[in-house]
Length: 185
Image (cartoon, helix red, strand yellow):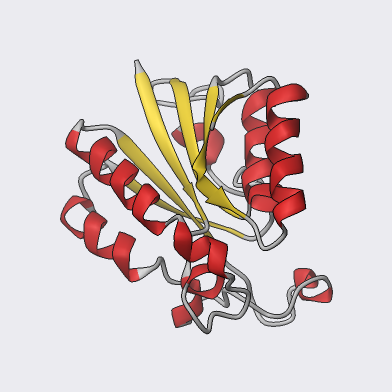
């Protein structure tokens, strides 16, 4: 049984003080997420870290200020997580996935890595736990794609955050009520 922990966009520009789109609630979930990552790695479980990644002039910058520019410190995983995963890089237990849109599936190799693509050499994922930011944007759209692929998902609410508290609550309710995902409060 292949279980994967998804850590969505825990990057300097969203989380670190002074990041282009950082917000206090993102920093509040760091201890919860680092605990889940430690737990998963100690059990031999795979952990996927998505990295929002943009080129200058990206169309998304018409909606949000420039952020997570490829190769900049803002695009990097926060130091608390980078330190945890350093011993595991290159082992196959940790995957860093650059993505340029809200869904981690858009123009990435995620279907193949999760064993969902025809001919994939990877064992099919059986369970995903999901944490990260922003609940109502990248977490929501990635969770929606997992639901449409009939992958059981547990959204760990204490490990999710948004700059908009109302949208955070709405997204958790939608994931539970509409997508049929397990939201663990």
